[in-house]
Image (tube, helix red, strand yellow):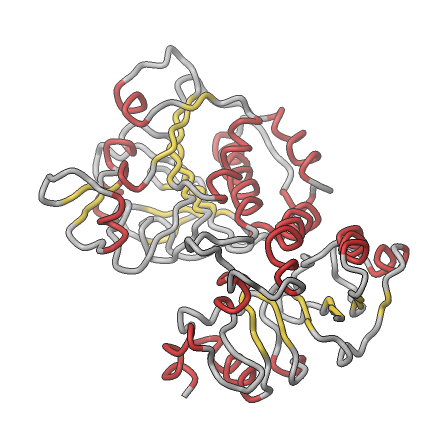
Length: 401
């Protein structure tokens, strides 16, 4: 079997890779019958020279490969027919902007294995860049606070060589006494954000303590799960299983936390139809105290009212005025500062790529060699080599018609 690491072709360019040079060597040692070729690229975080120094073949034409691995969507013109591809396609939700991509994949009889669909039997995702989205997103939140307060200045994450250099920047952070942070979410994104909070030695407290206790001038944060920031409208006890089966009949319970928080780090997963975490009306409520939102989840015009557009790595901050419900200049009095970069792992591409590659090697690659007994690859295959949608994704038939 021969794997090929493709050159990223989407604009703006992405420096991340699915496998680092050393991870490629690890796979070659682990699977004697495996070959790996690397398509040359001028933009990768691991330059061509590092792959060549590791003894890997650099070749422009990957048509002799069986499986092609990338990160972002592959431009239609770069697709090679009759191959298996792994990348983030952003098609399973019927995203209109990638309809033509999935149509082309079917026309070219490509097997598309979508990273986002690679899950275990219980439905838990097996790999992703979520951890580094959390790490960089939380860091950006404190960078925004330094800019807002004028008390310190952090370098942009993408200006740091790696995570170690980024964490060294954190020694500059100065937070006022009694500063409080609310964080929503419980997955890998939240875990990554909490690594930054831990590096800053910020104390974690329980949600009920957060709204009730005086912490004697200590900086604290609380992690809120879905049962904390949502409640049933009928007043009955919140049961997580029931909520995930049917999210109707629930409403936000976030305001009590927003009343005490100075900063909010959003790491949750939110599905269409769920209640808002805080609405535009709640952002105007006199009790609403949050002055800064680091929205890592970045659902535009979704559950976090202040996130009215994504920001960029080059221009990561803006402000939202609750009264006019419009964007205003960062630092405008009475506004909520917003950081909502939608490609956060791209700011630390080497670390994020290595973390992703480790999960790929541990959780996914073995299934190419063991017959996929748990159906992990099969369930993640949106299309098959016969030019048809797989049975798991038959619901996309009207999308590609």
